[in-house]
Length: 348
Image 1 (cartoon, rainbow, N blue to C red):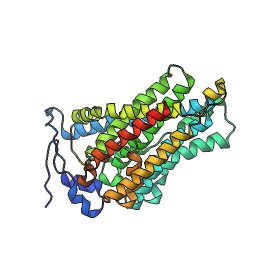
Image 2 (tube, one colour):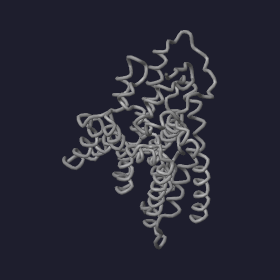
Image 3 (cartoon, rainbow, N blue to C red):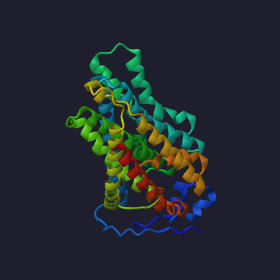
Image 4 (cartoon, rainbow, N blue to C red):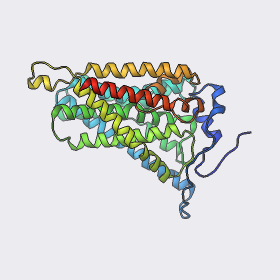
């Protein structure tokens, strides 16, 4: 029988249930069943239900803030800086993880086709208004801004409000992981790259978007590593912050690499501000494919989860919730470090 641990320890039953869409059945028995986290002091005047609700409200607010800043940056790139290709890359990285996660959950029976409105509503309304209506410039900004919004965080907090945590059936954990490990770092790389191109101090919206993406990515890395762990708010924050240096260095490296390897022409201002960076795109695609091969070699991952986990490993490393995956973390770190050194040398 499955044992259930309290406090900050991992609950095996919950961990196995959360990981079941991702791992092969035989691998669920390999999930970590304990945690080295120290116990978090209890707050006697706050019930577990209230603490769970406050935690959901805090992290939902962070997710919504990240969406808002991404929308502002997208509108600015397209309409103010006249970089539609770079803006298109940004919105693609915002929308792709949502549709990828929806397809992943639908393949595992956690979402039906009727739920597709949750990820399609705002993009359809935003792009429909932008391309289908004769809007003023201000309303064009509103339409582009709206394409980066999503009701999923609000749906998750509403569904989880009665119990202080989102139900497993909603797949909330996978939307959070995909947003934090695919959308957030990619949008941060693109936003930083745009700042490098302009050679100016980032605007408030750009800076807020970068900081929010750093935070979302660090939390998602920790969330995936400790899948199923029941932890208090301060432990959630502390262990997410511990991931921040690695996350920041990776994102800054990718943005700098994209800037240094962009095409050069005759040195004119137009050439220096060219928003294309083909080699950086090739790097991301190559690493994504190598992550696929790496996971296939480890072989505990279902085919439905390969794309999601491979994309998440562009920033992070193989997660800790499975012993087979966690055994590959050190080799993946060495591979990542070797790649970084070689690419930095080539870019310089």
